[in-house]
Length: 107
Image 1 (cartoon, one colour):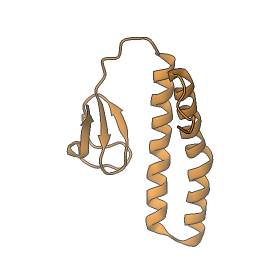
Image 2 (cartoon, rainbow, N blue to C red):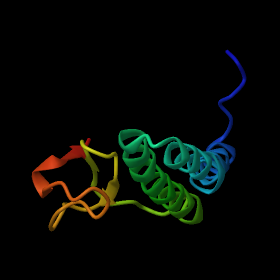
Image 3 (cartoon, one colour):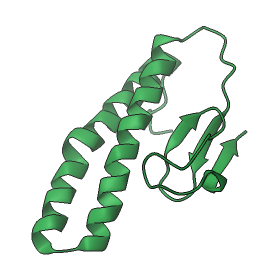
């Protein structure tokens, strides 16, 4: 209703742009502020989110680059930090260190 949904290519481009903005501008500024104000918990949260947003941007870009190609990949998301991986986890989360059991398969 708000006109935000477009065709797949436009939506993926928008997603790549949004995620890229988050890990290049938004979260770095939040990390800087949390550091200067001494908010350790916020700093940890923002740092994890920043790393995850970069991965999200890469996955959206990969989807855009491979649009129209068959996709046979299972995705798993870390319930602790939101890290998204292709295929079943083979060890702990590369972002937050949570065990492989922290990952949930996305149907």
